Length: 220
Image 1 (cartoon, rainbow, N blue to C red):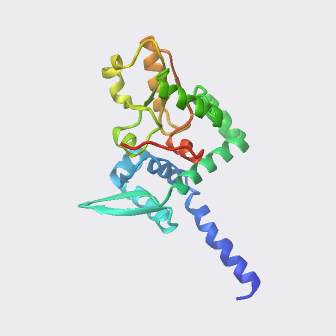
Image 2: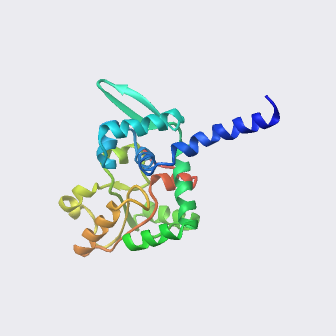
Image 3: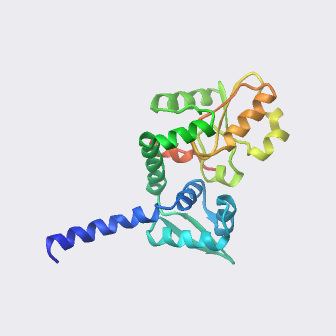
């Protein structure tokens, strides 16, 4: 091959990743898999699509080596092929937030602004949670919490908060998080807690954002 053919080949290979992440639903599937390994059925239900379409999207992601599949009995479970894939999703989203006015407008219209953490505020939150000055709750499903969660966070899935609300101290600030800035579960949790008189707020970080910042997760 001549130099031009070599360059074309190299760019074409990199473009495989771009093509794989060019679908909104495939991006959502990557965000879901950044939480934990999931079956096709679970991914389809979470993403609001049928199983056949979910399988087709996963096939594209697998061809680009972004996800891997493993059969478990009659089910096929998918997971990300590496932590760098989760970081890729975070980077794509943050670049979009920085440059696309349309995205900023959409987010401002849909969400009440969560607290966006930087290196200093992440360390501060971890220190406060370690000392017990604040209570950090992970409102994602239990399986996602078990796969990896913020240090010192306790699992309190959104659909359990109403029944378990008395487990939370009324005299401390409650910090809720879920799957990241696009996730609505933490906003619902904060609304419910505030209705019951708790001092509650949400943060934009999910585990993918925390990990992309170079901070450790805890598994259980």
